[in-house]
Image (cartoon, rainbow, N blue to C red; front, side, top):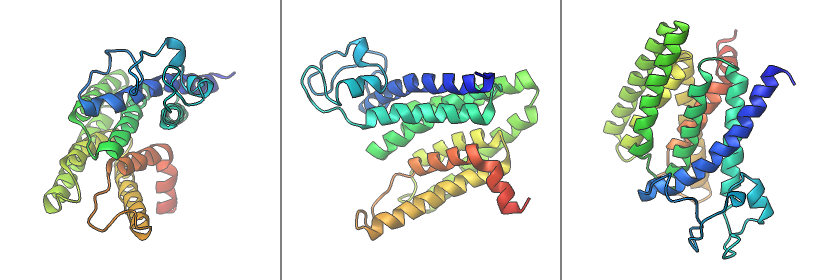
Length: 259
């Protein structure tokens, strides 16, 4: 197995494990609970789960999607999150290879997945995740710049984060019902992560987020699942647009610019 393939496989396997932890974060953070204590337990019967019941995907399949203690159904979302995190980690390994940036982007996409799921459940982007994510990106890319000398990329990343924050803040002030302040703070993180690559990637990622949100919103209204005045969580679309820009940004920009 060549080193590149080995890296992708290793990241995918580690992503499965991280995905299992993200399920805990998504459940506990909105409830104000600790993500490290107590150990994982069934939310229905409160029975503590053994290590064999916490193996990503495998445990869910072996138990046929039910709690071993009380028989309560375990949501399909749990293994899907684990597989989704594995896919995101593999995608980042393919995109960046064994570069200094890779650990930063692995942490970043893990936070994106977590925030998207919490936003879907609660219509909130909690500060307990957004603020640490912002700090992680600022410090993480500073370490990358120190190691590689890419200080111009670091400056561009910070400037992009500030610009994204300012732009979203203006939208929030103009239409507070359409965009919460959580999205404004989230935009800073997206701007930093995308700005490290290029300004064009920032514009593309945010545009795709708005585009996906608009398309899905229209579909939901057409299907009478949402009304025109109903809120739709924006975080998942921003996260999806960002991932698309990270993975396919340059080919899409080249296609648009006719290069």
